[in-house]
Image (cartoon, rainbow, N blue to C red; front, side):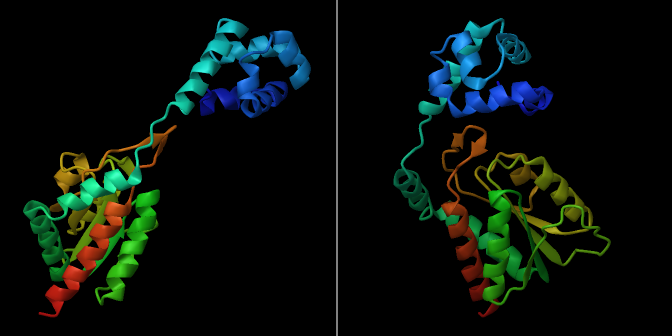
Length: 241
């Protein structure tokens, strides 16, 4: 309901009203228009303009939509973390998962240089993964600058790309740029059927239930940390056999 475009269209008085509504949502859904006008120190005509900008036919419709927004937030079902992780760690003993992780370690061990990329929480973990690999003697670089010009030949490199959905357009564009320069791609995604997983040379998937809170992806990243750390240890073992 409150999109960035709508909020940007608010004038000064409408912004005052918006801030009041956001701070008193539970109270506003039961208020009369005159009560809201008095409490927010705006006119009823300002409230009606505010409602029209939100595609509401009137104040009553606005209250209905606001109530639905409140109910949606209260009914969000966040799964028990222990249950989600128990399912993942059960799969780590699966032969197919172990084989994929071993294949990934072989590819990293054979590379002359390792890059890592990701955005958001995946970016934070990509940076952690690069540091963890380097701690085990495999020098790795986290590429933070998405507009970094790449002119060198990267045929002796591998890029570890992290993405929960496997569909992030920024990560995809970065992958295409690196592939054009010859880098192999190792993707770590939540499932093997995503676009990033399909275009990668090697993919390790962890399959946990994706969870969202409002528009934020709050899927646990513990499986990614486990994969990155196990990968680093396996690469070390292969380089020292």
